[in-house]
Length: 329
Image 1 (cartoon, rainbow, N blue to C red):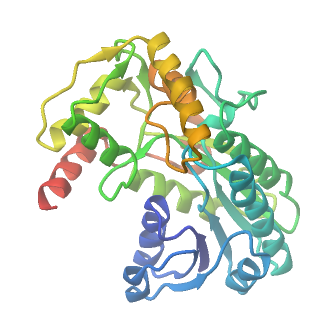
Image 2 (image 1 turned 90 degrees about the horizontal axis):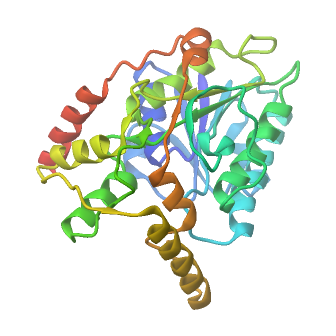
């Protein structure tokens, strides 16, 4: 199989590329950066931006499937930047698939497209899209997911996956931030840390993408649908965070901050960073305060049934692998 992976140099993208190569597939990558490690593995990289329709069309020519993993994530940057990459970039991917006769498109979405203020406990794919979004990232990802699923047609089968809180060796976002804040004595739980959350070990998230691609095709049962992906092991956020700290050989954290205080600090930080014109992410935002203080875990029965998805690496095994990885750094 010849596959294009957008964002193939990122955390999840690299894992998807690795699994494809391991089974002998021909892999291409669209990226703005340079990734010599991928080049050494035989991945053909096309340098460019997802906003450049010509680059996406050229990179995908002759492919059997596209894994659209690339996106602008986080909370820093203007709404225009998020819309350009996440919405216009996704439309370019869809049009490239149509122009090149590609019949399978697997899109990496996010559970935050259905985020609600009070949290989610055991939610499934019947949850509606959120009516209001606290930041540009979930708003643009929801718009892009809608476009992908609406593009499902006789000549192009599409599916969206919503992996929740991906972690593991090689993570450049969640784990480094947790460890850095803990080292500086600035790690706090918003609330008492008992709110229950889902997560997804990186290998499981990547495998879900291949499972979806292998079952996808015009008229397939999964075509035009979205699926939540996770470990299926929801746990209190304090247990997950302290598990990561333990894997790094660091003591657990028990310090807390009340939600109203964190929310107020987030509002102040957002305003200060906006007025200063800083492109970096504020240490706290109102959206982050809500995410850290509420439960959000999902029913993955549909993914188990339709994709044959089984989280092969448990949280305990994933922590053991993370411990070995951090020890070797």
